[in-house]
Image 1 (cartoon, chains in turn blue, brown, red, cyan):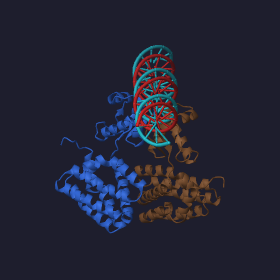
Image 2 (image 1 turned 90 degrees about the horizontal axis):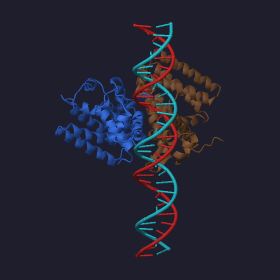
Image 3 (image 1 turned 120 degrees about the horizontal axis):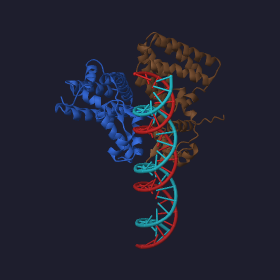
Image 4 (image 1 turned 180 degrees about the vertical axis):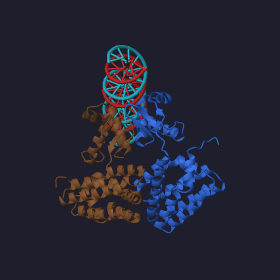
Length: 219
Length: 219
DNA sequence: GTCAATAATATTGTATACAATCTTATATCT
DNA sequence: AGATATAAGATTGTATACAATATTATTGAC
């Protein structure tokens, strides 16, 4: 899959940041990381550059690169954009979705239901991801699809935690029904609203998001 | 402003791509470019990596990097997203804009009018950019602001050409009035629609965009 | 004792040299 | 003559060495 070690290392470091192995504000020492990954500074610097451009780390000239976890405010901002992007995808998809994709969407939704019955959050997350990706794709706008996926990836760790809260999966599932319904009947406004509401962080979800900051996997 | 030569070179190459000094599909030879800019391959590769991640050039492993000008379809996709982003900024700004910013918005709009009277497209473009940036900023969402500016920059060369078409500036100006009106009265839906319509590429604008592909500066 | 200046240290930024990989051309075999 | 295999060439990818710059520590003067 990967062609060069640099991109591979970028992904690995990103994982370490997402999993909080690297704390916020921590400096990423080029030389130490190079030794850790068994490479020279050159590919490691390329990896750090990539992470800098995607906003996961911050580079201060002649000082070093530092981990930059989004704070609550920035995270809320990102979720706000995410909900708008998804709602746009839904709006466009309502008018553009193909019959085949609609069938696949139903199928993905069924798999979500099965995961819910087995009360398997991880499985639900995966099936849910496919469900949403079908909608991104059926927006008929490749650029929008790519951008939405990019942000989705960045928010993934936080969404995953959210699904762990009691009742969240059930609520998510019932919202899916409204989305499918709207897309099936070509109701652009309905799809738009259903998706915005599905993704946006408001009410209880806000508190859950803030709470997720302090969650330790131990408990 | 710049700290390292690599980022500086990235901007310069980007300019060359935007100004079509580098044709679509053209290979960017690392060694030749390094000589041209008087640096070694290392900073030049960093520059190319940056451009790759922003999508301006495409990197094929072990083959090289190639200029990748968006085709008409991709460009339409990007404009569709741009109009939606702007409309979101407007929707949010309608509820969040400060009195001071509203005053600045009026002022920026006045300057646009002056540029229109002098029939100075370049001046109009600059003032217009400020006008829009105030709205992005007053969305109260920093992440949205950054993302919108990023896309705006990428579409800049095309928007600039569009403004050259007869009557386009006058039309743009009258649309501004509706935007200011909506934002002043806190009309979220009005601002949303006005901005989407202002930016989206439809009708005549579509043909102008397609036509701009074949425009030579000589004529 | 405190402030400033200079030296020492550490870290990033760049250049060059080398290795790996892919493409292309040529030669040989069927 | 065509196809395949091998070798030559070109280009990217990586390692290492060096230069520039910023930070910190130390020394000296007031």
